[in-house]
Length: 397
Image (cartoon, rainbow, N blue to C red):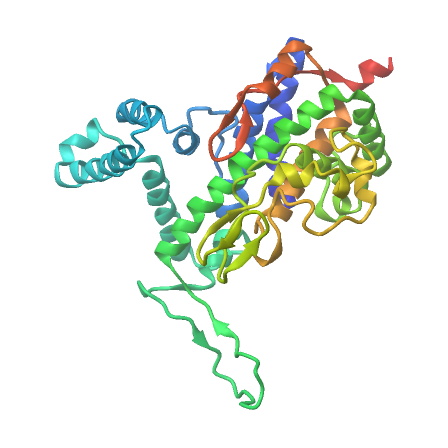
């Protein structure tokens, strides 16, 4: 998928070059958001969008509204109820708002001119159209996520996994493998899920990396030297691929250290226990309790991340083998983030191509204020990330 990612990075670099020519501070986070949205729709679902050149693209607008939820006047009333702690009424009205919206549009078509679909509903409808078109097109050589899911599609509305029809030894305890299929509705729902997971998380991670680069010029220079050792800094169109970036250990450590200090979705790593267990000082935890890992306590624990102070940005700490559960921005175990490798590859390609040409410059109070004004939506994100770009060849001269 690296050629598809590089194609999106081409447009991103054009946009950032335009910003460089203005020689003024700008919000780089906004450009990362449009880039990651273009990338996930292209690499994941074979839809060639152009959101970086068209901020009013309906896919981008609807997707952003999933996070901001500023798509209904009713939300103002709901916000008031939530703030005044009438949360039980907030939940009821939120559900009623979505149901009423659907009923009016379904049974009174004239209201469609005034009442929009919920963003999530709109996206799932588009996903269903994508599935229909891809099925009609038949098998293609474009091996994206949608193509992989369609390889397991079923026309049934409900599916029960079936064991593989092979002879098995009844004397063993090994369970036979299952034939797993997906309904078209499940595929559409997964498209929505992967879009959400692949858009905001990666763009936010790139925003935090930009902050670290701007405020740690020595580490930025070290990372640029590392990139120059693997790529010709003079050749701007040298395209990094998966094999090449997999060899870049310091780049990997730089990103991992950023995510250690600035975990993107600290409340996402949640599990539900199937057995009772006891915690000293707390008591017995009953079956079915939702348990969330405290990522900040883990990621800043000096016993896990010393001897260098965990509050100091120090990528080299990852040269030391740590406890496997000490670093969990993507979760851990068999249910960790399925898009982790894709997200890391996407970020690495962006950083290689950006830092080959430019340095990210600190804008003083504007940059630091970005990291202080955080918004908690699906992720913990800065409102913006104000930086400035400087060409490296100008620094040398």
